[in-house]
Image 1: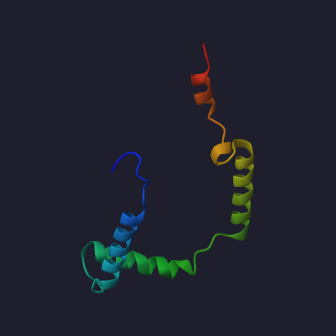
Image 2: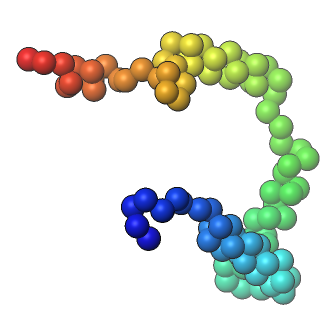
Image 3: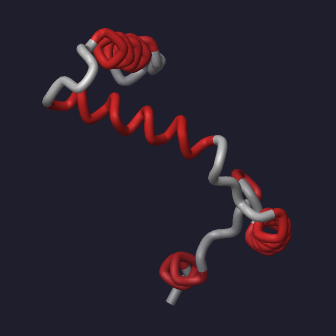
Length: 91
């Protein structure tokens, strides 16, 4: 790959699809990584319906994130950290 070729997510997507297929087709209760992945998936599925953040937590987190974004900016509008600005300043 040359430095000017665009990056693509297709190889990563293929590997993820292959892993998903291996987990789905592994015998139930099998040992090794596939068995562990199955157990984790079942646990996650069971928790999805029961574990939810409190409404107050979500509201407070959103408020805090919006306040930080307003001060620091987001993406291209983000400000450089003070230490980086001091290092770049002429002496």
